[in-house]
Image 1 (spheres, one colour):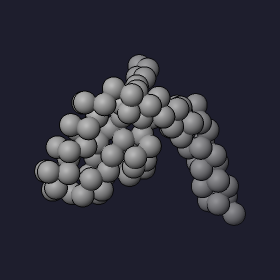
Image 2: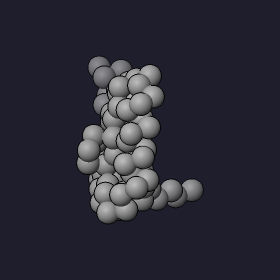
Image 3: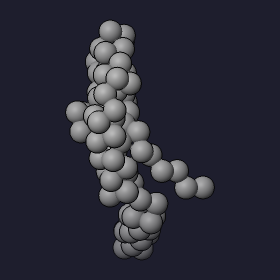
Length: 88
């Protein structure tokens, strides 16, 4: 299954920092800060240009950092390294 993200995200500082780059691909707000989350969501809802810009940046970041082929290659390399350590 292939999922293409074209929308920016909002998340709490404790969870999505690897995926959402603050003020570039979305907004990171302090955990349990409902007002900050509401402000970020409202800003995205009301600003079409910002939403489109962040959405495109999010899609580009996902392709660059989290491409399934790149992730598989990383996991394969780690597995090979671990297996070679066990053979020593």
